[in-house]
Amino acid sequence: MTKRLGVMGGTFDPIHHGHLVAASEVASLFHLDEVVFVPTGQPWQKSDRVVSPAEDRYLMTVIATASNPQFSVSRIDIDRGGPTYTIDTLRDLRAEHGDADLFFITGADALSQIISWRNHKDLFDLAHFIGVTRPGHTLSDPGFPEGGVSLVEVPALAISSTGCRERVAKGEPVWYLVPDGVVQYISKRALYRETG
Ligand SMILES: Nc1ncnc2c1ncn2[C@@H]1O[C@H](COP(=O)(O)OP(=O)(O)OP(=O)(O)O)[C@@H](O)[C@H]1O
Ligand SMILES: O=C(O)c1ccc[n+]([C@@H]2O[C@H](COP(=O)([O-])O)[C@@H](O)[C@H]2O)c1
Image 1: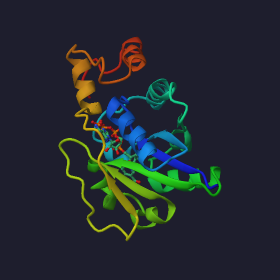
Image 2: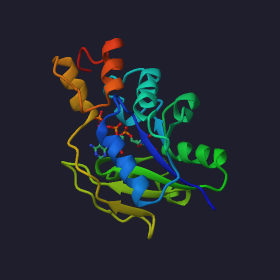
Image 3: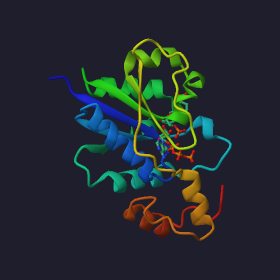
């Protein structure tokens, strides 16, 4: 049977329970065999802010997903170098996973920006896109190709990486917003002590 592979792209600075719930819910709803988390190398649309080193974001993603046998992490966007474009992510994953069906998972905020992504018209030939609800953002289809996108409701977690970074900078706890191991990694590496 054709493998059904979910793809959860993100900057994950840090990864939080909003990302994990979205991936878990979509895996269940769409009967995915696996969800691969793909931390960005250089998120070019976040070039106006300081982004933590890719290795820190990668390791936090590994720590956060390690306990789930359905979850894995890919270095492809980090190892490719240069600005990260989803068109490259999907082409590389397609080459790696043969004839697997790809399902790209994205929150309502990111989905509304897809029109600004590189080669956005070609993305829908490579993967089925799944837009998930996110508190504070409207989930809508602004005219994607017929059958290219599914919109689904996931448990609402009003958590953002920006909010987590700001809490750490202010000395406030991020316990239960991010997995325990990620709290400990942030502390060990002294991440987010100053807002960027
Ligand atoms: N709480 C959430 N619920 C649903 N989807 C989310 C949530 N947080 C992030 N996402 C989605 O996960 C993907 C990766 O998000 P990203 O790593 O940029 O996190 P973020 O919290 O939006 O970060 P930042 O606050 O730094 O912009 C995006 O598609 C985003 O829409
Ligand atoms: O392809 C693009 O041009 C593009 C522009 C912005 C974001 N993306 C992808 O969208 C996903 C979420 O990105 P971000 O910046 O919200 O963490 C991640 O996989 C990014 O590589 C992709």
